Image (tube, rainbow, N blue to C red; front, top):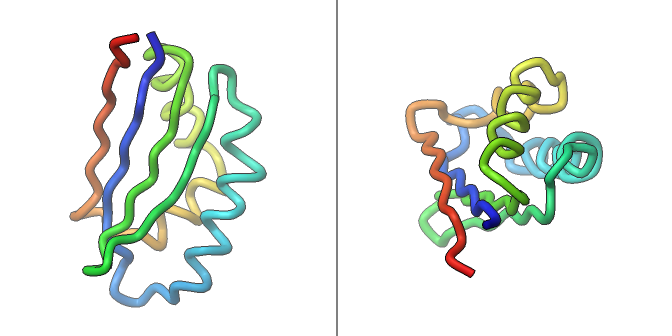
Length: 97
C-alpha cells in the first residue's frame, strides 16, 4: 500500500508569496526527490489562501523517515519558516489498491 500525505497551511503573515514559491521549488527539486520511497509531490493553493502539499510515498515507514530527515534539512527549514505553524496540519492515508 502506498501512502498519501497531505499538508495544509497558510503562509506566515510576513511571507512574500514569491519567496515561498522559491522555497517550495527547492523542496521539490533539492530535498524530496532524493528520499527513499518518494513517488510524487505537488503543491496547490485555494482561492481563500490555504495551501496544500500532497506527497505520495511507497510506504508509511518511508513517509515517517522523510519527516525525520526534514527536521535537519536547511531546505525544509526555509520552507517551514515561511509557513504559519499554527495552521499547519499533516495527515497520512493508506491507499486501498
